[in-house]
Amino acid sequence: MLPKNSKKLRSGPEICAEYPAVIALALAREVGDSKHAVKRLARLTGASERTVQNWLTGVRGPSGPHLITLSMYSTAVHWAYLSLSERIEDPTPNASALVGLLKEALGLLTNQT
Image (tube, rainbow, N blue to C red):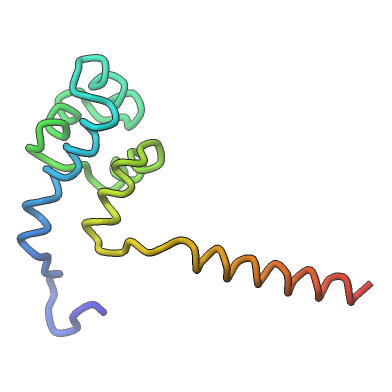
């Protein structure tokens, strides 16, 4: 829950310090750090090549829209973001719940006709 008595959101300094390095490692794992990789990521995200170089070296991390675009195309970036947010969950229970809901929906649909 967001704090109600403060006008500024507080972020943990340890997450802010880790973020660029974690994203840089994830990008390096998937695309490397060649000029070709820089150009490819720049075209993909719409960011400048200098900005992409900063991401790959860990100087800066991608902003929100760039992070979303990167996580759409990069599994490593997606999992890096989830690990930083500490929201990694086992997908199996969600799949089981979905199957149950689908069975229930099919039962309702077949009983209506």
